[in-house]
Length: 138
Image (cartoon, rainbow, N blue to C red):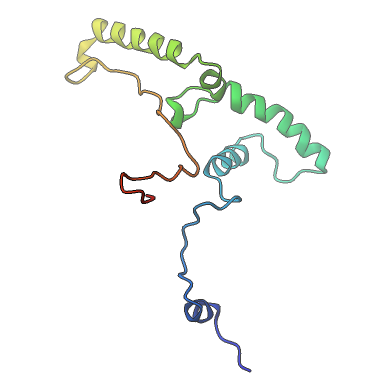
């Protein structure tokens, strides 16, 4: 018996090869983003001496990440602000500041009063499948 490349085996079995990975439990864009933020911190060490050192580092990192770090995907708010419902208040305060800045220096802005970026209405890792009127899944 002769071996063949995996790609040919998959084709023989009718399996379509793809590089996208929907519904893959270990491919979470939120976790990947958090991990990149962790590794790109200036104080992230080249190597941890022991598991206790890594745990100690993370004890400081995760409160910073959730309570201080402003995330671009959620309108430069912290996850804590969004989770506890403080986002509308913060965005209204930003809007007041932007209006005041426009009133004081309209030449700095092109054509209109600036507005803060709104929060996304939803964020999904794997959005639920929608059922159409004819009963088909999308």
